[in-house]
Image 1 (cartoon, one colour):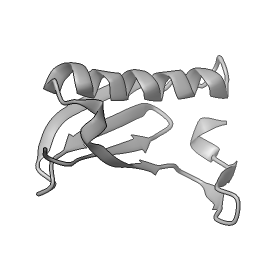
Image 2: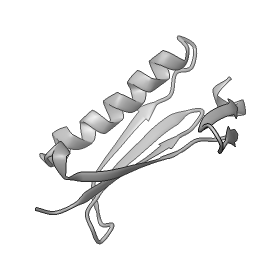
Image 3: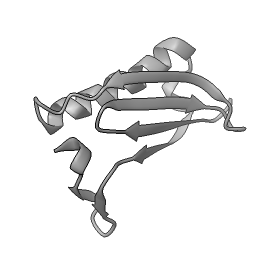
Length: 90
């Protein structure tokens, strides 16, 4: 069984997600618009939709994913893992 990895870039205008193999070759890519007007919960659902799209495109089993990286703009408190200020996301 191969290992797979997911990267998500959360931006103020778009969410870009990628699914990679062990050699970090891109297997699937999903781009969704970021809509912050409904609030943070809606943004989490948009991230979920982008990741779901990766599995739909690739047919990869979720059980093979070994890690997810999430890039977030702004200030993150590394002690607790909370975004304190994200200027692009209001």
